[in-house]
Image 1 (cartoon, rainbow, N blue to C red):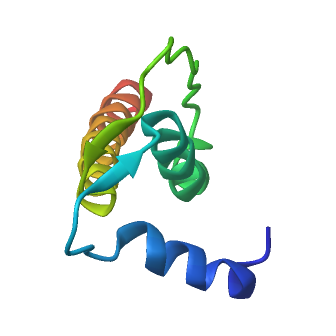
Image 2: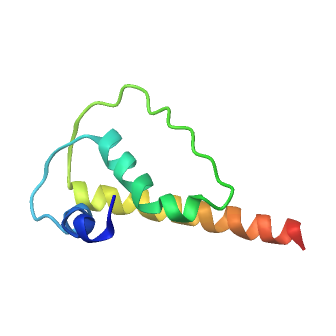
Image 3: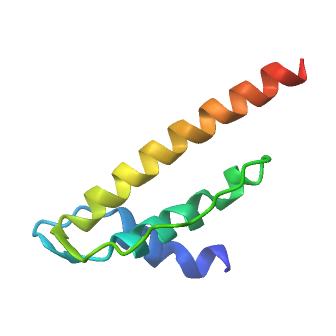
Length: 87
């Protein structure tokens, strides 16, 4: 995917939405992983096994931010551990 074409996607993905609506958590997680793909190429493998998650009624953008923050923190810890073991 080209960066310029994704700007509306990323803006919509993380933009605050003022109302709750039905959201597919699998899709949110996939989109989060797509955003973080460049950072995960640092020797990090992800196995996606979400199971059968139901559609939930929530604020999708806030939920996506939660996924993003959790995964970014996990990547940071993994990168730090990798760098320490390489020293």
